[in-house]
Length: 214
Image (cartoon, rainbow, N blue to C red; front, top):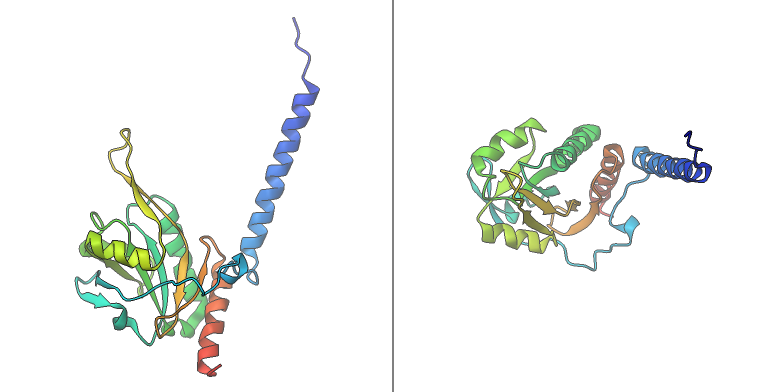
């Protein structure tokens, strides 16, 4: 017996596909537009919420460093982990593209990758990992307590996501990229996936503002 197509169901499916396409196109357009930086201010976040603070960690050369090590430079900070399969590498690549887009102005910026998985992300591991993205990247690790402390000061969420089906665990974590001033004060943060050219323009504006003394 020949079935009669369910016209109503087909119509609903087509409408859903059109809606998905429109949402995807809108999201792509917003990310691809350099003028639309997704910053803390644009999502209603203000500096009234305390972000950042003193820290003591170990860089990918095995050296002990603190927040004072980088005073005088803008800090471009991302929290993630080296065994991340997709999101972290993508974000670090975007950060590298941001620095490249800034040209010589990037000399005022120190990009930092702070691990939320210190058990696996040792200094030796990070030395090879961060070098894959940009020569100026510095990878930071530490004890479990040290990582917990710096993550808390930046209001970063993270936790181990273990599965009985996987041989390796993953880490759930928040995905903002932070911009800190030369004095260590929080300036703004960018949502993950924000267009690198847009981020570069925003950081350059902060650098210019500092130069002009505004």
